[in-house]
Each structure stands twice: as C-alpha cells, then as structure tokens.
Length: 446
Ligand SMILES: C[S@@+](CC[C@H](N)C(=O)[O-])C[C@H]1O[C@@H](n2cnc3c(N)ncnc32)[C@H](O)[C@@H]1O
Image: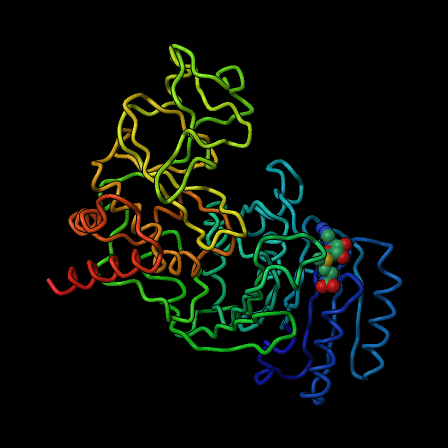
C-alpha cells in the first residue's frame, strides 16, 4: 500500500494521516519508504486510534518512526467519525488507511456526523474513507484497503458518486484469492486496495491483480472509461483490465428489452404461517434457490428441508405470488464451489407461484415472459462471457437485482434465435458458449 503512493511531487513537510492506526503497521511502512526514497522531506504523522489499549504499542511504533529523523508524530485517542478535534481534519498530503468495517445504524452518531460533513453512507469503512478524503489537501493522495462492496453495491451508489466527484482513481488492486489474505477473519468478500488523488480524474487507471498474498502483482493501465463506464448511471467501478469485452451485439439492458429484474417477495421466516411442507387445496409452489438449475427450476428437488408450498387465498398472501407463466429465476447467492456466479433457470407454471427472497426473477410488468425468450435469457445468463462481465464489477458471490439491471443482453430476436438452437436441453458449458458465440457473431454481421 505504501508503495502505491506517488512521492514525486511532495515537497517541504509532508502531513500524513492514518485513521484507525491500530499499532501503526501501515504508518511505519510509509515512513520507511519516504525516508528511503525522499530523505529531503520532513514528515508529520497524525495517528487516530480510539482503542486506548493499543496506544502503548502504537507509541512504540511511532517512536521507531521518529528515530528515522525529521519525523514528528502525534496520537489522537478519539473517535475519527464523531470527534470535533480539528487536528484530524487536515489538510493532509497523504492518508494511508485500513479502516474498521461494519454497518452503521441510520440513527448512530457516527453516521449522522459523517453525513453532515461529507456523505450519508451505510458502513464504517466508507465513512472513514469519506472523512479521510475530506481531510486531504488538493492534490493530496489516499491509499486504503476496503471490502469490494462499495464498487457495485446499491447501498453505496451515493458514496460512489460523491467519491468520484472528489478524487481521481490512480491504482486499483484486487486480491483474486479469497482464502489467503483474510483467511483468519472468515471474510468471503474480496478486498481491494485503492489509491486516489484529490482533484480531477486522469484519463487512465492502473489495475493490479494479486493472485495470492505475497505473489507477484501484475499491472495494466486501462482507460478510466473502461473502469467507470460513461453511460453507467449506477457508476459501478469495474475491476477489469479491459480484456473482457462486452460483445457489441449484447449492448442492451433488461430495461431496453422491457424486462424487469426483481427479488422474490417471500421472506420465509416472516411468512411461516403461509408455508407448508405438503401440498393442500389452497397452496401453490414455493421456489427457493436450491430449486434453481441451469437445466430448469425443479420444484421437486429438496430445498434443504424448507416447506415448499405456499398458501394463497387471502390478499396479503396473493400479493406475494406471481401469476401463472414462464419466468427466469436467478440465484442470489451462489456457493463458492459453483463455477459461475450467475446461475439461472426457467420456471414454467400453470398456477401462481411464490418466490423466496433469496432468488431474483425476470418478468414483464409482473407477468410471465414468452417461453422462447425466457429460454434464450437463461442460455445467455449461464454463458461464460456473461459470467466474465459480471466478475468485472462484482467481487462477491451475491447477485443482486441491481446487478442484473446493469448486465448486458442481446436483443430479443437474438435471444429467441439462441433458444431455437438449443430447443430441448441446456447444452454443456463448451457447447453453450459456442452457440452464444455463433448467434452473437451472426447478429454483429447483420
Ligand atoms: C482494521 S483495524 C486496522 C489497524 C491498522 N491500521 C492496520 O492496518 O494494522 C481498524 C482500527 O481502527 C480502530 N477504530 C475503530 N473504530 C474507530 C473510530 N471510530 N475511530 C478511531 N479508530 C477506530 C480500531 O481500534 C482498529 O485498531
């Protein structure tokens, strides 16, 4: 992280902030680099650490930093998000941060203070990030390690917009292996390191991919427009080297096709009274993600012992169902073992159906889809190219309705043609990918 900052333009006394300093590991790395590469500079470190138990250890690290010479340090033992202490509000030339993670309740002081000063944001890490950016001098730089959820999470849209209006992205590093770096914390989310400069965006961003902690890091410079697409109104930040190219014939969104992506409406633990393990005269099928297979949604499969029938007949329950018809169902949480993040299947029913809220479904204004179109959508959603595109903007195994809304799709004719090429069964992955490739190149040629 310390190596990602650009030291060339620094001058005189460099003011450094490490919010949530812990015992000071990041600070000492940065001081070491600065002292080695820029012995001409004077350094001033502000360490903010709320946990008094860590402070004696932090003091030792800072004393070691001061021993390099021309380094001054100060510790502020206060809450970085709520404190009114002006010394932690900058301006700073460099910020290095590994902030705490965790949801911020809407009515918490930390969230309210951050919203007043910068932007209303739902997580401790994004609040630390916003406050750190606000404390930067113009042209100042920040490097931070965070979960990847800010880059495409729907809850982070306002934060992303705010962030991109304040800083230019310089470097993005993604850890491609989930089980090495944060193995001890059981964190499934991918983690990323981001470095930024306060001020306007430069035309390019450098992408780094680390396959394993400590392994060689590969770099590639890509245009900013590939990382944040100009036409993307959600401003997803894509971790892509530009190699995954969306085929030109799949430049439509679901909205362009008149299709809506929604999340299933039944929350099983809240609707227990409406669920039953056996069919009754007043029940309809209840679909869980365990029923979803690329080969079709199969209600006969076991849903890990969950009751698979849903009572209808009262209006509150009927509102939670969809009418008879053909729908595309997509798992919201694929397992780590599944090769694809996006797993979709067709559901066809002559009766209304209830969908669990761990599923997403595609529909047309609340009603079913044309069966051939539904089949074409499933083939496309289970293709490798679609999965590759998905991975450029999502770092976890969860597939949200917002993600589906932003994914690229071929037009309806092309999807229906695709369905006609595989009318009976869903082909194996290689054959499916060949079919997709064939219809897309034909569509491009016309
Ligand atoms: C993920 S740890 C990182 C520690 C250190 N920067 C590192 O990388 O080793 C986050 C640190 O933030 C501190 N912290 C949590 N909430 C804080 C707050 N509101 N204000 C200041 N520090 C806080 C924790 O005590 C913890 O030491």
